[in-house]
Amino acid sequence: MYIKYCRDQREADPVNTTHYRLNATGGNYRPTYLIRTADWKRVPGAEAKNGYCTLSYCWEQSGRIVRKANGEYECIDNGFHQIVQTVRKHSSTGFWCRKKKVIKQVTYECLLQQLCKDFQIDYLWYDKICIDQSNKQAKYKELKQMYLIYGNARYTVALVPEMKIHHLRDFKNDSNVVAGTNARDWALDDICYSLWFKRSWTLEEVMMSRRILVVGTDVTFWQHSLYSKIPTTYDILSGDLLDFNNRKHKSANQALSEAHFRTSTRQHDKVFVLANIFPDMFDRMEISYDIDPQTMFHTFYQNIIASDLSLLCFGSILDVSKTPTNKSTMLDHNLPSWTGIGGLHVPYHMTTATSFQAPYMVDDNMHLHIVSTYCTLPIEQYDNSSDPDEIDAQMDAVHDALFKGQAVDRNKADEDTILLEMRCDMDAFANCQATHYHRGNPFANSRPLSLTVEDCKECIILPILFTNKYAIIRAHDGAIRTARVTGYKYSYFMPVFKKCSGRSGHYKGIGIYFYGERPDYDDPNVILEAIVKDMVSYGSEEFIIE
Image (cartoon, rainbow, N blue to C red; front, top):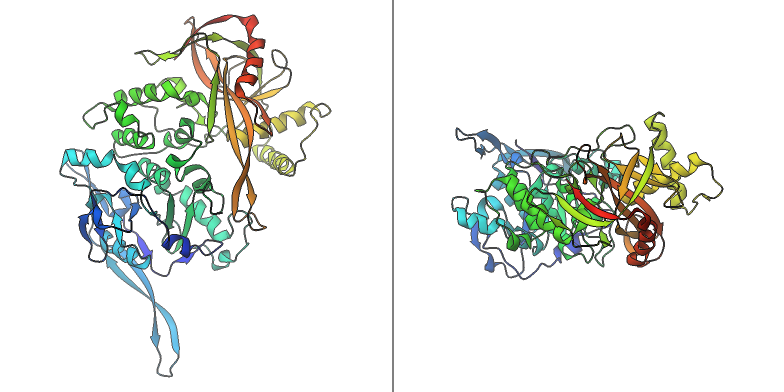
């Protein structure tokens, strides 16, 4: 595939970010090699005294992809990429005449060099040139340092040709109260449907990057983490992805909420990506293209859950019309239910409190063993017989009311109103649709569940409490367009399990139970202690989670 780059880029940012971009600093680490963009020569990374930038792009968009006889793929660049520039021709009367667009066909590297000149990038890390593709050991070394390469760059340039100008009026400031401009809103929409947003490597690249400059065909915007000191617009990049490694609050479920739906040319690449997001994995397991990918996936998840039970924090992947919101790319690796591959992980940071009778462990068959008390919950399925658009409209109205602090009094409201508000709670705090609800003992209040199975009238709750530290985002400049984190709310979830038919003591992880929300921090261990008191009458046993 060949792409087009217009030099007359329009900025979709609601405020001028050029100063931030030109003065952005990186870390002390330098890659083995960089490209000096002035002459497009590969040079030692140490030459970049004032830092460097990294490139994030889709390989398929750098030329024509051809499959070779050995089954491998290669990219052939015949120089059909386009650089478009608007020029002004001086008229005989002394005035500028009408603008004229000049199109030049170039190779991908020539396009990149022009982009770097336009954005004043002196040194660039571009994998095709900076990694010695013919040296297997050198390639492995660089692939295991991707988190350092992107994490220490001044910023990452993401090349997303699907991002284009929709209409010039969209650039009017304050045309969109959240994104700042409608142009930026369209740009984010284009990104979410782009090839760049579907690939595994680009996920790792953006999560490790401190800042990002997204360059489309003719529009660009700048973004950094919402958790930095500089106010910015709130979106999936600033809120969920950027600068993941440097965040004080992070958990495995956050990364897996995206990673389970990304694609790669080789399945091995997904393991390299996950290991770069959790770089201590390089010390805990062997990662190589010579090892069966299923073996590596199993080892990875065994290592992750040993220190982070947030893998169990996932819900339904279906929307209100029972249509999958995404498609997992991890279903071919024989992974157990507790990895969450059958659902959608909650994308927010979770801490975990437990009350087990013995340490949990994963055996060689990938079965998770937990010895603990438990309780059984009778549950009912939400009625989805209404028109999905009508349900969405009702939920939007409730979300608006909750945003304004107009929650219903559940001691006085009718059951339908309470069930609808609970549905909105699950949507807001877990980014999952509520599929079932529980009422009555052992817990007094009705609460929603988000499950990956429909035919379930009874489920098991174990004493595992996830605390979601949910950021409160407030306007910085009197409008929502630039914002910062001003505080946190706290919501609580518990994983849900279902008995496996015909196998005593065996269960499957099927989703989450929403325990509630609190405006102030309460010690999760104290909350869990109260929950466990309600579980004592059930006794304890060993649960083998397949």
